[in-house]
Length: 119
Image 1 (tube, helix red, strand yellow):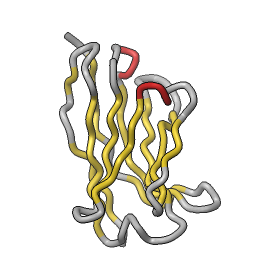
Image 2 (cartoon, helix red, strand yellow; image 1 turned 90 degrees about the vertical axis):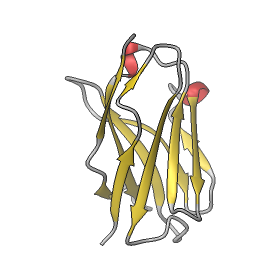
Image 3 (cartoon, rainbow, N blue to C red; image 1 turned 180 degrees about the horizontal axis):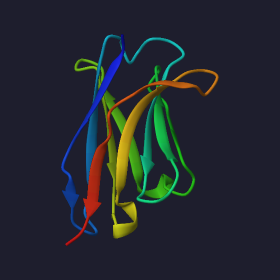
């Protein structure tokens, strides 16, 4: 059973960089054909796809967030990390990590972590 767990600060100040880590157990992040993804949900809004790092280590980002987003991984720890720079209150959201498949299915999700951007 694959399990994902987000961790990171719950409060970030405007203009700073948000950094979250997703720890994965029960499966390797280098297993073929899986895409390790960050998704967020602002209060009162729908889910927003942020970006992903593939099993091979390549990355894809949402065009609207690409200039501020970086996703990396540590295969020795079986973790992947989101960094979102120059945050504003509009980046306040519940942030989730998830495992995506080749058919864009997301069968495994972390429980989510609330991030608030406020001074």
